[in-house]
Length: 461
Image (cartoon, one colour):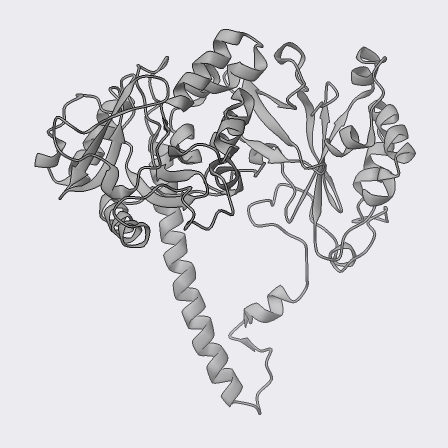
């Protein structure tokens, strides 16, 4: 199942772009067609397409936890799915996500699973692959009966579908928004909805025809009943951060253009050395040539030495040296059991290496007390790999975002769960009960080849 990256910030399309994309879809898909007709290249089902998409990690997981993925993987029947993005789900806030989706797996309560399935089925039309021309625009006839028995409404701009809404997808619940400027009304919807138990109007982003139906990606979650909790409004800090990021991007683009111009001038001056110091200012290329393994924004963590950044094993050293994750773990008194297990399963060798491609490891190591509490459980190689995340950058405490998942070394997802008003973080698998989650009790232990966190329980996929 694809991991939705916390660092990824996907912006919802403007209405103009949504309409443009749908017009293109109409030209490609035709006025009306069933997606499982013989003339359709049947290579991927709805379930497969959603779970392969970087935009739909949360939706994929929710379909799997409720079993609806099996229905949407079948090619015997046609479906139309309105698929909210990860950003759409995250915009509901942690409390609503827990109540509507994640309680289905953490509580074991059949009622919780029903709540999650009901919400998902409100995004599905069963028995029909509705192309753009099939979506009803005419007032009084613009209702679709969804798979949970409730009706959603298609709202159009210039006879082109632009939104697919439930009863609780706008604060005022009126359909007179078309009389306003679209961008102004959308902003007003967000401001009004934030203070109440509604979500903004779900706008179309794109349309995809697949083997057994049609998928419309939308930028909000469709609601047929009120949310359990109000949507958290955007903070002033979020607005400031967004403005700063945009300013930084503009500055970076300007710097890149200036560097390209300077490089062109230097190539024409062969007689001059490529590395120069002018008026006490050092050439940037010379500065970056030292090869120090410093990650931007991480000056509070241990820096790699020149030797380790160049491919050293990182197995310890003199002053300024560093330990590998394996050596670090085996040097700690409360990780003796973990050290023995990684050695027994030949994982110690891997966690002692610094891969040439720069891969970093993030390891969640259960402490000795965790193994004592679960003394009857024999950890397998697959479960051991479930404690390791490998990527271009290691994940420090600040990178572990509440309710988000990461794909571990064994290919299965673990989830960051926050409790006590986000003061406590745990990293759990699907088989970890909520009553005894692996809590992060010691974090950000830096190593040459990544970072080590200590958890209070064994993580179980």
